[in-house]
Image (tube, rainbow, N blue to C red; front, top):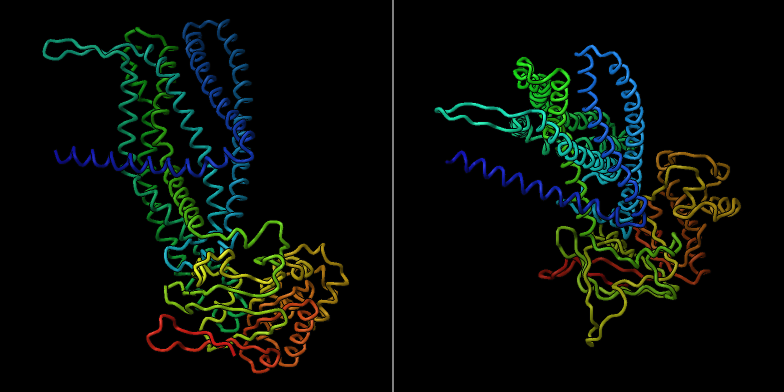
Length: 611
């Protein structure tokens, strides 16, 4: 009784898992077939389905050909033999044509679906700073989004198309051949206590019993494959990610003599990859033992069952071969689950990774106005016609929930030059992220003190604003692309690009505009900051928000470049907001926003004092 209850519970659990997997696949698949490419996608899918049905029909014709051909051999009928060879040539030609186009159109559907999903995921990941906010999620965050977009999308589309068409093929094959096998197999009679019993379609029931027993045993052996595949993909991606970090921070690691430490760290991560792979390999080994034996036994099993009728003269050789072929098709269709168990496990893991990634992106609140599609790439997060910085009372928190600043309003008018000061780690850079609209842990009131609804957002940025991080980013490519980023280099003349380099004290780079390189690695920290300043001087924004943008420069270069920044923003009628520690930078600013520790018992860690 307990054993029956345990089996029933396992069946119910597996059924729930299967339903959940199918719902995930449906949620990931449906958007493509309802997208702007829906008619092309549906036509391709219909063509693939039609060709798969055509392949099944060809197999039915081959099965019938087997009977006639082998009967001709047994009867030594040369005329029928040569005629059937001609029939075989025609069938084989049609089979080859259908097989080639089935392969081609299936691959075409996979690649077009992958292209659409990749574009969709890239758009959602990169819009509204979702990619940045996901990285802030220290707990339950998304690991390795690069792998999910590149590898998991490719594997999901390939597996979904292949497995779906394979299941359709198996189902239609089963329906097509089960009738043939039922008619060929005859009945099986046996006596029990003097009573004679007859089982019609005996070979069909034997095929069903064989496949059912194999499926249950195969599932018992390989049930841990899905979780091990999921873990393997995560560990592989984590190992690759840290290899990329070593490449990205190669100079810092070399200067710190950290090669040995990184080697041990990477070896430990690779050990986790190998350990999990060996666990997966052992499960796959046991499953391969079973699957290989199961497949080999299926070759002789129908012959063994049908041989008494052949030796008794009830059927001829052609019918025996036809029974063997039909049994093979029915048994193979019923055993589709066994044959694809490893791939199903991998597909389940990939689907789970993509759905969790999608859920994480959907959970991030995206400010559609922060990055309008028709805005110039250089000046995002601004309000047209506004030339002042204004915020509602903001409460800024850290990811762990601690309140950094509470009920803090910020205002700066055109012509203002503001310096943000405070001890290291107090949250100066976080405040700049709030102004840029990329920090998610911010709340603000929806009504003013008079009870009137606030019609604008918590932060109103001046028109044509740019932000300069302490560590700038440069894409791999030519120097002109790095200088114009994120705009297209075609928008700027060579003269404008060279003048910006001269103004930023980089005269030695003016002849390297078309040189491609990894500029983050090739330039020193000071050169990188000067190149970032050249980018700003090239684009001439109205407002500049700089986060220690000159910390790697000597005082003379810093003084020269700050004077150029001030001249530019004054000519454009804007303002300057800076974070800096050096007293020399303070001389270029008239207003100071000072981070001061909040009094004991306050709800926040700091208060912001304007001086």
